[in-house]
Length: 115
Length: 114
Image (cartoon, each protein chain N blue to C red):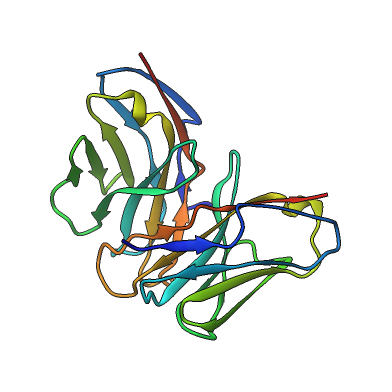
């Protein structure tokens, strides 16, 4: 069953503007972790940010922040002040510690930053 | 830095061949994973292993098997390759402990089955 949904196959943003990439998830567990990864055209997967289900504050890492709405089961990634180098595929993922501890990914969103 | 190394970047095989994809990590991680990545489908989990000689099926194990004889090495085996197994294959590892503990990925193997 699909557990991670990214509804935006592609997104465009103007350089220096902010952009939000959507992610919703489905789980019956109370304890879980949410991750965002970036995959540039080179193919490497780069870990960006993590949000734990019990974390009271939204996670932030530099220009990346996570808009975590637990009741809505959404964990949207916000990139502020977009740069050309932000053009890449972005994947949302969830780990459920009590479900064999594996990690499931969404289909991804391709972000293109326009100069 | 964690290094996850996949033995081949590109691989071309014929239908029916037995194919081995090798993955080695150098950080003594307990957990290792194999995913395949296809456009529009994201990353789908094939198999994972949480210890030597242990393996668990992921979402799409059919047509694949795995081997974990040593902690640092996790091999994906296509017993009889088929054209629908043409894909990008990504290996990843992760420490068992640690709340955040993200996956560390290899650079991927792009497999073409003709």
